[in-house]
Structures are given as structure tokens and as C-alpha cells.
Image 1 (cartoon, rainbow, N blue to C red):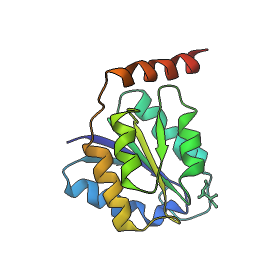
Image 2: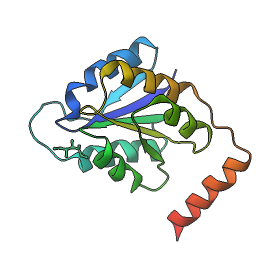
Image 3: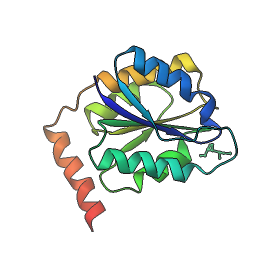
Image 4: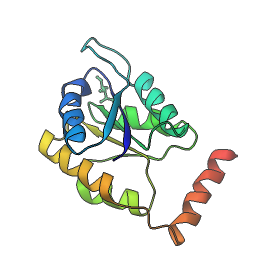
Length: 147
Ligand code: RB5
């Protein structure tokens, strides 16, 4: 069971309840950081919010959805300590956990369907960081962030 923070924009909001339901059925505790209506909004607001919650250690992981997953993942990656992946297939999702220790997953509701999204989420949540040689590369990423 994990504590998962979720957010979207007005485009990603259609898919968000289905992902929340899926995560809840798997036994995870999910907190939705908005938005809660389909009124036009700006993805950096929610990318930042979820990223700050994850970076602060209030949640184990974060999931973000916008039209492509691109804008919201770029926003999340600006928060120190965040390694967000935007992806539309399960292989990269899984490897991003094993090699890159990603702590946020983003995808696009205009790019993939709900069943593929669920498969990506499952692979991402179940894969473990391998550490070892990969840990030093994560340290190198942190050094870039700290300079
Ligand atoms: C909103 O029109 C759209 O730009 C947004 O959902 C996302 O795709 C940005 O990366």
C-alpha cells in the first residue's frame, strides 16, 4: 500500500477518476490535488503541487495527467528532488523505476487510453529501484540540481 498524490489539468481530468478508482481498488491511498472541474486551467499549478508534496515526503509517489503528459511533467521536474517520467508504454515506466528511481509518473489522456494507462501504472508501481551503479547516476543528477 502506498500513499499516492495525483493531479491533472482540465484535459487530464477526464481520465483522473478512473485512475483514482484503479489505484484505490489496488489498496493504495490516493489524494487528489485538483483540479476538480473541467474549467480551463494551467498544468504547472498541479504539477508543482503534487511534486512539492512528493518531494516533502508526504506521499510515496505522484501521478500526473495532462493532454500529453509533457507540460505537467516538465513542471514537476522543476521541483528539487523530483524525477518525473512522461511515458506512453510500460517498458519505460518499469525501467524508469529500476534505473532512474522516478517518483512521479505522467502520461497524456490525449495520447493513451485508459487500459494502457492502467498497465503503465501497474508496471511503474510494482518495479523497484535497483540501486548499485544506478544510485551513483541519481547522485549525479542531484549534483546538477544543487549547482
Ligand atoms: C492543454 O491544452 C494542453 O496543452 C495540456 O493538457 C498538455 O498537453 C500540455 O503539455
